[in-house]
Length: 428
Image (tube, rainbow, N blue to C red; front, side, top):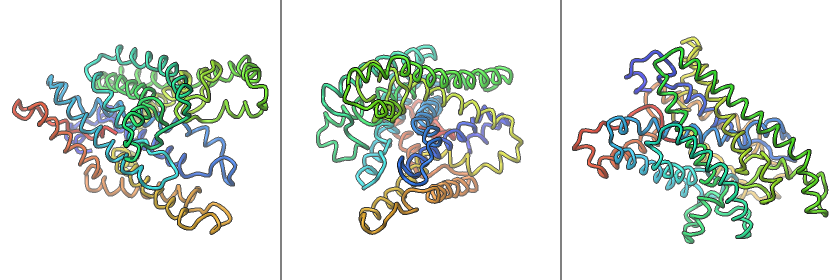
């Protein structure tokens, strides 16, 4: 927030406070996916699963692309590409190190950080690309990725490998690299698409931030485009399955019950569709990496980002002040996500310690709306403290300091007087 105040702008789209709100919603969505009862458990809410599964994490990734641009733009504005590359590389490596460490602990969810860090490294060659090339590259990856992902897994006979990619996975470096890029739960071949889209969105946002009319047009257009992409994806995938996909799947596997095939078509994947057959590749189930899955994720992300930017732009000042704990928590995603994961690790460890016979039902402190409320409250407390102190999250400050040092060390930018890339948006 200090950079926003230093800029002296009263325009929320210039400060991009709405991005912090959107990022907080992404974190909240992931909390819901991690902490609410699973299908078949008492208290499971199907509608909420449909809202957050595959949408919260992709929103997080698209905003990550926006943050990549915000974290490197001061270097790029003075032509210091090497400094920007070194700074971003340091950020990516730190995120990977943290993710691999957290994944070592017993936990019931897949840690996303290693995949995210590798995807950040993958954005380095794209830092100077214009918007049209960013979007073109994202489209090409979205089309080709699904044609590589599922067939490669079938050839290797793996449905998903690597999980959260803990340090132990790096005992086999080739398998770990393969998991991070293609065969893992959040493969970079898919996630890089979301970051590239986010980078394009950031460039467009920065281009209109001082033009009120252009900013309004952009927010309206992005919101409508996002809504249209999401609806198109969901309707198209369902229509294709109803008209052709179900019959083709039944014919290919006559032993499977039609109801089971319907369930498989809706079931979230582990980074790829259930099979490489065309009817699975034309689905939009969450975390399958198909073209329609990607379009739905991008569409939801664009809609939420436009909505939150519009809210931050037109909401009364008193409301924005009252919501500073929310925006401050959203501006500290690495800190908030890590604290959330540590909470899940603690609960998982207790379950393993007590053992299944110790309770007849899932305890509230493991999966429930109550434990979700506790994690949400902790996130808001973190945000409130940071807002009062006017500081970044501790992990964000660490990453920023290390990345600045890496830029200076790697490119000699300090000798050329390149300014550090200081702004309120983290690269996570």
